[in-house]
Length: 303
Image 1 (cartoon, one colour):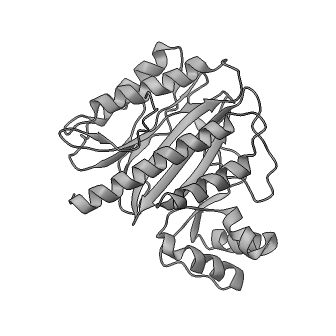
Image 2 (image 1 turned 180 degrees about the horizontal axis):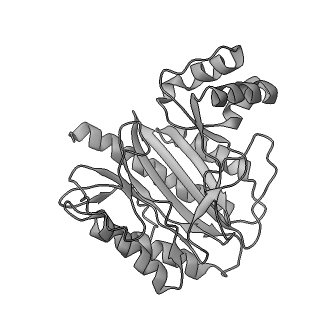
């Protein structure tokens, strides 16, 4: 990995950390609009000189993959557990990070939050060339169980490649006996999801997040406009409100429906814990080396 690439990755990471923390702290205040904060995060990414890979959130038992629609009126409420997941890029070099906050003055879920932080810290300490993926999973599960919880076993960390959120290697959050080893030069995102529930997720509700297949095509003007708008994203995700704000709700719905029918976009519905239990999440991205560089750590992060 050359110096210029590393500098781009580090820049993406710095922006991602700032925006992730700012967005989460805004939502921690009861009565804060989901929509306004996600819009803020997207704008802030660009203000700080990076590209938007994604700005997503998830509430309570939903672990991941929620973006508000343009007319969403929901606001944060006392006691909610809100995950904020921010992805940025500089010329396609991606940073991926997330954190969880409990809304208001409630501390009911402080142990659940702490367990996810501990799980992430334990795994990060082990990231070095030659370490097995199973060892990283064992470390995460052990920390979750130490406080009476479990990791979500069908969500995992991943490698990151140029313009690819998931680079092809999954990082388990439990000991799955995987003997594959971490390699020097990998970009890795570790993201333990922790719950008091069954430790599994399923799709729940309407997808508002999509990824476009390369070389996509379509017949209708509505669908072609979306393809044209998203082609420069090089398969990074987009969300419904980007399209509906530009073309209107009806045209957006028709265009996305055709793209789904033609299988040129992949939908990513919200992912909810199967027993409807709360889920916490913390995530960092890093470059693997003899001394691994965690490049999404904010100066105020304690994890």
